[in-house]
Image 1 (cartoon, protein in one colour):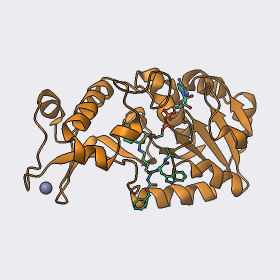
Image 2 (tube, helix red, strand yellow):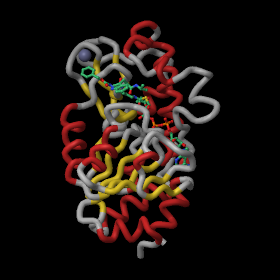
Image 3 (cartoon, protein in one colour):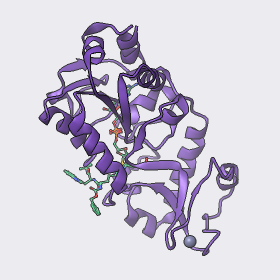
Image 4 (cartoon, protein in one colour):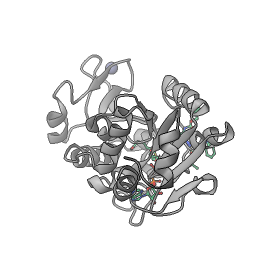
Length: 245
Ligand code: BJW
Ligand code: ZN
């Protein structure tokens, strides 16, 4: 049963979607980007998650991503990821659009998942079209236990994480699909994002412009809060627990 005002809005929704950010995985032990202490060794994401940083110092960027891959590979979906999978099963939620690269929505069982910023368990070649899903190829351990820069098995060039860095285009199909869903949605459930990174942060605004409602779960105010119809100032697990009670 769905409780509270947010639950009532969701129950009546014809086409609800969710839009998630790093905060939904915080309770799984995955660090966010912009909360206190920063993500890693006092570097800002804007200094590591860029093609320039990778060109300048691929070792540093790979060290950062290996550290995160290790951490994320031990993380499990939390109550909030599971609640979204359950809402999809109930036929209420039509899609989850995530900025996260951590795979936790998929592990929780969400079927219609749109990953706007890529996936940390995939690598791709900087020179040719080679791509690899390290979970599927079972080569994650090999990559994590080596200190070498990973090279393309096809052409020998440097591999990079298959994620979207600042200044890079989002996967075209994913962004188009996300915008299309947002223009159709009558409700968007926004969970755990600071709402400052674009074009992803347009999504709740598109829903709102088309007359849809915005429900937000975040312990702190975000770039989305000014347009939220319902703001639940709680961590994701607790906030979603209240809605699904
Ligand atoms: C909790 C919680 C709990 C804590 N429960 N909540 C328009 C305007 C201004 C700027 C731009 C614009 N358009 C483009 C730009 C430039 C740029 C940008 O947005 N810059 C701004 C920062 C100023 N955008 C880009 O460069 C994008 N590309 C682009 O536009 O390309 C144009 C182009 C077109 C055609 C050809 C070529 C180019 C790309 C953006 C890529 C972002 N990449 C990253 C890294 C991904 C890989 C990786 O993971 O390593 O994506 S950066 C990082 O930020 C990551 C995240 O997905 C993203 C968003 O962060 P998120 O998820 O919101 O996390 P936080 O940490 O910011 O917030 C956490 C929230 O959780 C907080 O609110 C907490 O309160 C909350 N929280 N605990 C619930 N328990
Ligand atoms: Zn290659």
